[in-house]
Length: 170
Picture 1 (tube, rainbow, N blue to C red):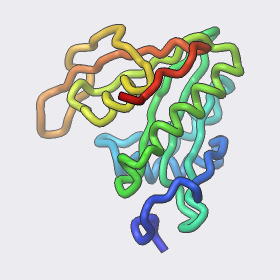
Picture 2 (cartoon, rainbow, N blue to C red):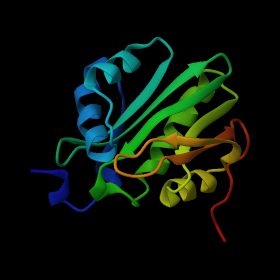
Picture 3 (cartoon, rainbow, N blue to C red):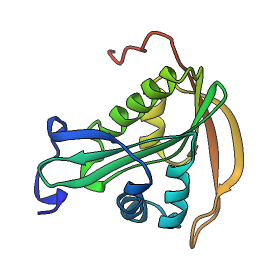
């Protein structure tokens, strides 16, 4: 049974630590979501790095990976290297849950700020990150090369950890 056969329901999803043994699962999802996709060997190397902090979202009903987030610590800062949610699970709160889980984990490791880069034209991701309290810190012109299209700018965003969560109520 595929994850597309069942409606998304987060109560059946577990966030599991992702080590090198989960590289194949992450690579399959990454290939569905990104062009160019990262090769499995590169993902395995990243997940095997001592500073890696990563999670895979696993749907217990379908027994499939439905999301991932890969981060890396450096001193008192951390960076989200890549994050992805299976298409049928997008816009159901799983990305938010994964970012929050990663933020809690790196905060326990004494990180003070979490950084990421996002394509300037990725409105859904921008909404997620800004809603979580990230703020823009920089711009990288033409950072993302797109097959068959012009390069897209990347926005660098940062989240200061250890502060009260921003309310999402209007």
